Image (cartoon, rainbow, N blue to C red; front, side, top):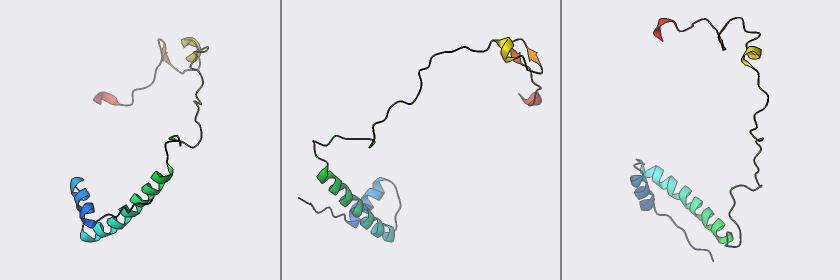
Length: 102
């Protein structure tokens, strides 16, 4: 059974006021029609969305595509810094670029 879901310009103006949106009369008129179409579309979907149809957020089942977070073999500090032009302890040593404003 289809119900009439008409929207009046006064309702759109009231909603705009609640949302603190200033609308001209032309904008209210245009939005009345556009929002009416949206309401009708939602009503059509509601007619076919019955309790035996499960709700979905995605049309295809989703699975986790991430690998297990298992630590593997890592470089030692000496291996990591072997090709560095300069080092300070276990860190790369680089020239300062910020100057005194740090």
